[in-house]
Image (cartoon, rainbow, N blue to C red; front, side):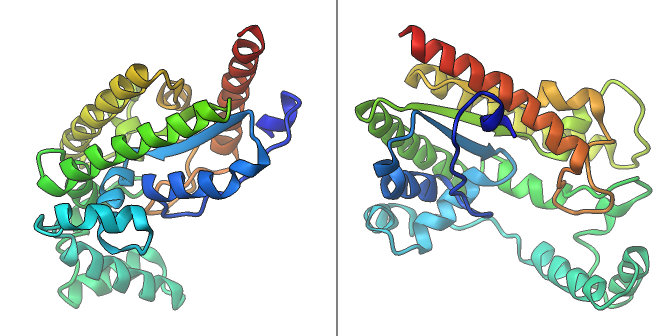
Amino acid sequence: HAVGHVGLFGYSVAINGWSFLQYLEAYKEYRSLKPEVLLVGVFSGFDFYETFTALRTSAFPRALADRPLLAAIDPVDLSATERSRVRLHELVNSGIERKSALRQLRREGGANALEASFAATTYFYQTDWRRGTMDVRHPAVSAGFERAMALLCELAELCRRDQCVCSITLIPTKEYLTSLYPGPIACAERAAIDAVAALERELVDRLSARARRLGIPLLDLAPHLVTDLPAIFMPDTENGHYNAAGTSRIACAVDDFLARLCRDRAAA
């Protein structure tokens, strides 16, 4: 929608679950297409932590070089949350209604990590999981962020050589938007959500500062989305997936961002 509106032809080459490592490797693979603009969609919820895990586990030569430095760092302990999440998905996918599935999960003794996230809210939050993946004071998250910035620097340099504008679209979590929302939201977890959002704000500020230092244009989607909360999200989805209204709102923001990047590129 966005690239077509400003008269560009766009390629979507990203895969769900990618980190900064895959962003760099994908550009290396597709740079022969000679793009004028590269849009890197960064999800502040776990892209930095996933950079840490990707560098520890993937077979890319770039990862093998970093692995000895990261091997001694313990990953964030998400095991209890992840076990509960997997079991919850099993129950829901079997046809059980979500609230009934949660009650069954509680009976099975596996809901301790998820129970608070479901408390009397119109849609689901991941405060326990996010607290782990965004706390930059944890060595794994801190290492993931620093390695992500090194990979971003490498990506930006490749783009400069190719005369391609490297840019970032920053995608916020539902928790972060909720903390910014000026209106009332029925949520018993507001204090926990605000605490998690503060961790995200720190990551966002650090990323924004690095992007400015590298001369990378950055579009923060939060101001474009917060006024429409909660109508922009699909109901009862644990990852905060956007519905048609949310996707359209994002496309309009990206549309304006792309148009500005193209004007600046033409002027240069």
